Length: 453
Image (tube, rainbow, N blue to C red; front, side):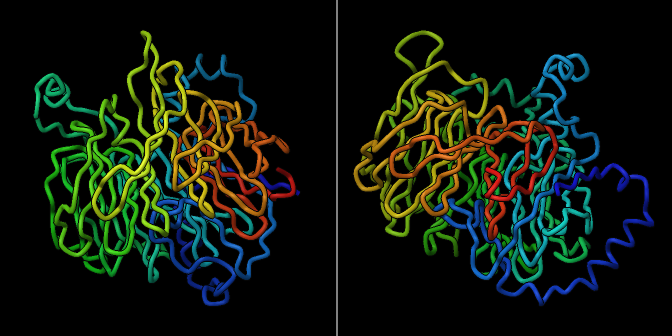
């Protein structure tokens, strides 16, 4: 039976909050060994961007949790616009903007309302919450009993917005409190915090006791993960908005905007190994997309190019050598109307094939990793998130809330599912055992049995 929970009571009851902390201390934390991931060290769990965990887990649950103020299920778009002005406002105030992470039986959920929520993976019941005082748009990272989360918003102060017209200017994105926080993963207690001048929206990488991230003030940072102490700081001028970092051995890959470059830095020193500016890259696409990296060392990124007619653009997929930044291949996926936001879909790599969508063409694709050759494409709905794959099925979350289940071999639609409580932007779906966990733009987190999809 599906359970449905609303978290609004958490804001008004400190007694309950203390109870949740007490519960967290007595939870059989060690008993989760093997049943769930122990750590979650980057966006989408790994650089392939396929967050699937089957080892020892038979999780098969169905629950829905809404953050305080989450839009009621099945509320019409007309009613939403009447109350909130537009759907974008709802997303920026209440949405779950990016994927949840799971470790040791707890689901960690970031919200645009400024709170990080820890939920019991089996029931969806709250364990603790933490107020970061700004929007949370990155995946929580967990290692060695510590959860890391970055806070920041996508706003430009007027003094920096006008700099877009100035060539080679240094533009800072983000206002209000921007910081990275380290919390006790079981209790939510603050361990350390590190403040920056620009937003800290992208998901960092945890590597060798370092927390590595690009952000809105034109730098890439390396922090000591235990203490929050700055280890190194590299100026790149580009601001990094939603380009979550990926790792290949000791190489960190991050995309930035103004100027649009893909950067590779040494994880130990922060030294820039190479940087790449693809020809004709358009808008903010490089700093918004999260690159994937194959085990063979091919970086996969999607960018937007100017269209051939007014009001249009083109999606381009790139394969790049992780060691030297040379483009191995580039493939035009197609053209379409310029998306208002979320201009590039996140790629996922599985057994030598790239699975991705395009918000420009509104199609899903399977692409040969070595050559960039399109194996199949399927018309769906505008999408930003990376698909997730298990067995012969590939799951595409889309902008209107429909999750399409496709045959990975030919792209044929097997089934469709919609929870009717919001759509999906860059939210990546997580599969634990036999359950998919995914957040929506309207402030809901859904745990869905794969058998229901």
